[in-house]
Image (cartoon, rainbow over all chains, first blue to last red; front, side, top):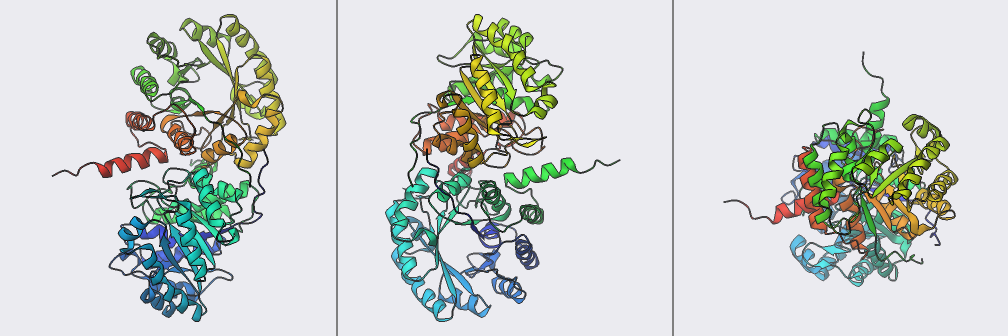
Length: 313
Length: 313
């Protein structure tokens, strides 16, 4: 076989503080959220989605969004981006007031998901984001776009690659600098992910695409590898595998950052991230939440370290 | 990119009753072991490694090997193979007496691992297997060969693909009908696995190769996919992800059968296995061992079922 040439370097967009923590039932102290961002910076992450400017009525965990962002931006690390999710103009204005330099908007590729998740059609949701992207660009704020349910929807089942391509192209037309393609419920596999990417890449250059894969069925690392084979060089991931799947309690959510970094470094691909510091961060935030890290890499690395540590007297 | 053509059908060799259970500290009742094999048969598994004829001094968990095999073979399912591991002639004779129709032998691709694991050189270990394969063939018993440490060794680090090819070719020359390539400590990634397979396939036809990957660092599903791209169509796996990694307590062992089956079915590849029955089996054996299934697929499927179940009054 001919092995496709993989990218030399990959950018990781860390989802832990936002997509990860937003699914936590226990309220995480603001101090812990800020400290998580600081530890991720020190591990070498260059893009850290910091919080979400949604209504605290819907996501109480993100109720301290303005304070978290302001504290993070009071001492920004060099060359690090701190995007925040802004589902509407009100959220965008609050994010801007807190100092946001980058925001993210999202559309679903499935009508049923759009209706049930944000109570409007895909077209309506995209129309709602247009004033956000316009206001953002007027304010010199970069906008990242997410498409959710890119291979499957909890209500509709399989999602057509063309539907994903359509939403991705619309977000690109609005000026999103990057489109992150989310397998929200983790049902993708290397074949369905590659079919989806093929369709999207016909409308949006592959250099502008990111993979955002959930590990619900353990396929995320394979899906990252399949995406690398298609030329995708940006991936979203969540330290310690933070963030469960909202549609199946007990199941995994975002792929763990350390699992993706392990894969990439093993493939000889540069990430700028220090794996040991990342594993430390996974262990630390998991301990704050009162559990073990969900990722295999964190568990294996920690088990190996414990084995090497000298036994007590 | 050109997507390599994948096999249409894959054979899974189930490792749970042997490679899985042998790492369990608590002694598993013989009855449970036999029942595990029965449930695996009903889920559609056609090859189930049933036990190991090692000295009970070394592996007390397999001390009931003759009884387990005899009871399983007293009511064999149609078309199912029940290989057993036989590390030496004494073990082979005991396996034959218990009715074995298929046995397995193993060699390491790393000298240090061979010395520390079985206390002899690779060459000595292979010489020790020759009388086993000869006796087996004389008795009409099929022999499967394992190579361990095919990409990395806990003592030596990286293992040269040529060393793996050499051991695989020797096992083939001895008449092993299939050579299973084991990433014993789970350090392989799609690139190192493909480099290893490329070297081995120069010496042994790829149709005779099986992938045996451990999920220690969460790479096993990606490694299965990378191997499918090279034409490998047989994989070893362990229901429920049974079997930890002996070199890192708390880390994962064999890739879970249900994770591999989920991948294969998603890719449109036939396995003859019924996923739901397999997940039931994973849940059942995990409960027998007093824990949750380790596999993402089992956890996600079980969580989804629990969600669907009607709530109590």
